[in-house]
Image 1 (spheres, rainbow, N blue to C red):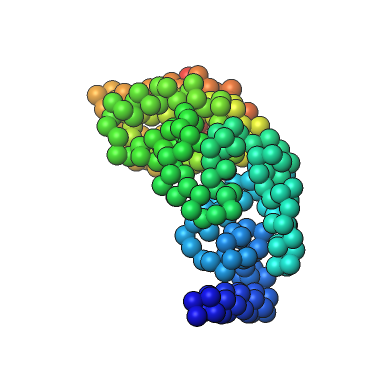
Image 2: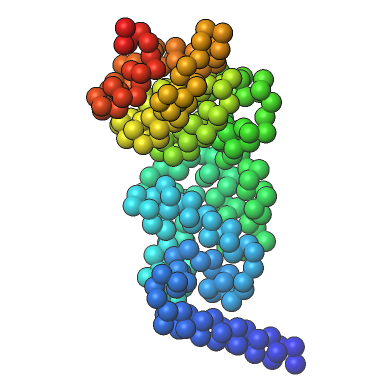
Length: 285
């Protein structure tokens, strides 16, 4: 009786999976289930569980390193093709075949992370918490990103020490991370005037490290500099006397002066004339 019920259960689970796939194919491709990133326990065993997401995460990680960025599984929306891929060890991502990646993968990934993500059985896979605590995230670059994310909650002393040490780490970051993650975080923190000069030192180092610094300087940095150093015309801020000096802002101006070459190289003549030359007295005198 138990065997009959088990067979019946597996049969109906299999039929439900097939019906789900058929129904999905009638939907726009953008909302269809992508078999290239699905776990075998879901597709082949009709077993939907939390661990299935961890398998998909492993495939996504490989795709990010792959060139072009595609999954190591190419099922072409066909369950029969997917089943055929898992019938041979050579077509399943594993350490023996370099996880079918066209480019070398970091040792921190291949050593401990991917073997426990791209695992056939759900019970063998790491949890989301274990993934975040893995050796892959135990490095200076990830620690720096995490500190940046938590920067608003840090003490002034912690922020100052971080900014002083950041210059040693910046060259190790991928250029896209510098442009899209680190630079915006630093510009946002420029509202803390006491850190202004330290932040600007790191900002200009990023500009030097990027293949083309003109776009981020024009789109991201220049508007921030104008906001800080260029008060509205005829405002009281421009009429300040010697007794109203702002040491933090003056320290920031000194950094601008030190990097005047980078400024002139990465902004138009009009922006320079109408913008920075108004706030750096040594240029206009």
